[in-house]
Length: 76
Image 1 (cartoon, rainbow, N blue to C red):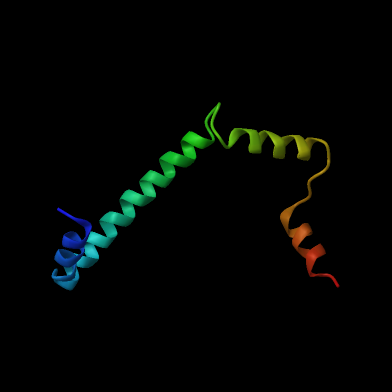
Image 2: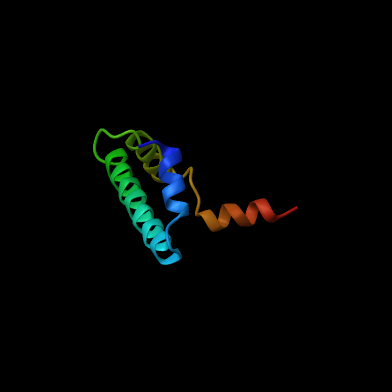
């Protein structure tokens, strides 16, 4: 079955069924996102270098709370 055939079939669904399908697809995407984030920030994951860099900057006093940074950007 092609994507176009699937799209056409979805367009023919009753509204309640389309809503149920959309909710199900969103749940699948949300679960996939959660799994990717868990993988990226697990030891050895792609995001760990970034997280370690942030921790180092905080420990060295090079970071500041987000609200403080936002306030500084709002000042002329």
